[in-house]
Length: 249
Image (cartoon, rainbow, N blue to C red; front, top):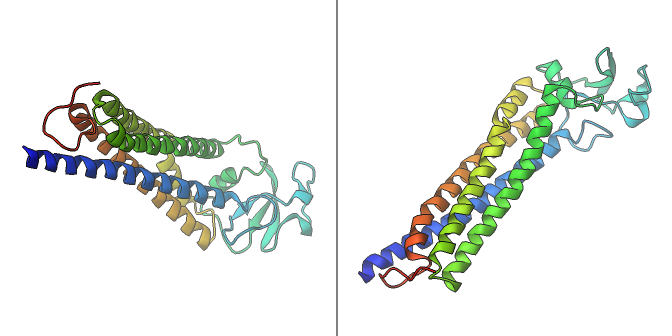
């Protein structure tokens, strides 16, 4: 009996540790994905800040296309030339990089800053739900920490511990569901196909897509482990020694 219980305790501790480890890993991937998305848009307005260059972008602040209707030498940063469109007005185009899908890239750049196109709206939604998912992932980690603390402080509280596991699993599945429901994977695929950046930028797009897939996978794994832990908690609580079922509290 003691041997069997010892094996059970090891399995339960292992699963508990894996739930926390995968949750932290998913949180890290979500953070990196969010950072990559921010880096993609940092050169769409103002002076150039990095080597991640979009094929099309807004004019500089001194040449606001809402006010100026004629291209001047000071309208665009180095490496870009000014053009005029009947749809968005003045814009800057990279002289060394051609857009794979100009209309998609133009809409993603949101040159007039009205975000009236489906591409821009999807980008805003993906950015918003990524932040929500990031917060939910942090809540999942917090729940896993509570689960570990319960093992050492309230080992007989089987209802509470099982509830923590179930709630943690639900939060993690929700964090996964909202980013998938927002169409993040499809949006990232469209961005890669549109080819809106130079070589460094397209590598960043591919890396961001990979980070999203890693995040989604790790979040599902962590949520599944938390769900598997719930029956252990409901039956044994945090009891690591002894074969008897603890008194329900």
